[in-house]
Amino acid sequence: MRDRGIYLLPNLFTTGALFAGFYAVVQAMNGRFEHAAVAIFIAMVLDGLDGRVARMTHTQSAFGAEYDSLSDMVSFGVAPALVIYEFALQGMGKLGWIAAFVYCAGAALRLARFNTQLDTITDKRFFQGLPSPAAAALIAGFVWVMVEYGIAGSEVRWLAGVIALFGGLTMVSNFRFYSGKEINLRKSVPFFVILLVVLAFVLISTSPPEVLFGAFVLYGLSGYADALWKLLRRNKPSPLQGGEK
Image (tube, rainbow, N blue to C red; front, side, top):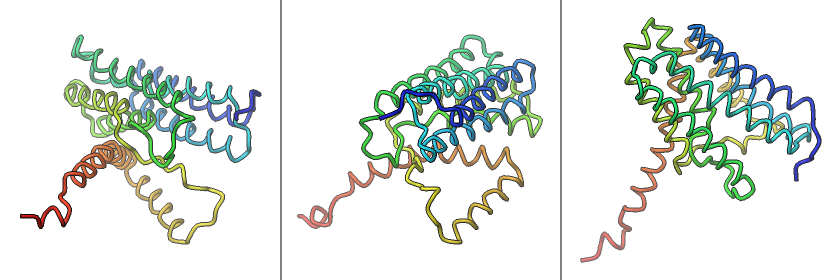
């Protein structure tokens, strides 16, 4: 059961994530889309830390849970929707803001469903629906790559609309996405795990926009691949059935 008190340490990380999301909106309004995209990634990192810090320091609270959810709505719901709208969708008229709204509404519904089902989740290894930070990273990664290659938003507005709709609808889907929650940072790990972490940092540092965007595209598609794999296994005849005449 969560404590009803307010703890400073985890809420500092949540406040940092909230600030990064707000900063992304401000930068998008000023046309500085690279800064906006980077701010969303920073918000994602801080959001990932606040819960782990709270669990490791035993400072979980009802206030922190609610504050984190509201922060997520700003950083991973409103901010990405406004960034993608300002970057590419505003030239599409009604279709543009509808696509941005679908994404924003998807994030709100995803967070509401997660909060109401939190105590009934049995398999914590998987999320139901694409997590809102991952959907936000998909939007931010796309914008960052376009800016990196000097591609104007007006040139890729339809692709931007598809990505916004994909993120919004996938968040409210029932597909499974790996959560990584069983990873215990306080346990010892083999040497090769540390080596893989180092290699991941090196890979990201070589070209952050492309690597991050590619990684979250693959993660976003992983839920569909998992559902397709389960469907194929379900429809695959057993050896006995295959041998019947």
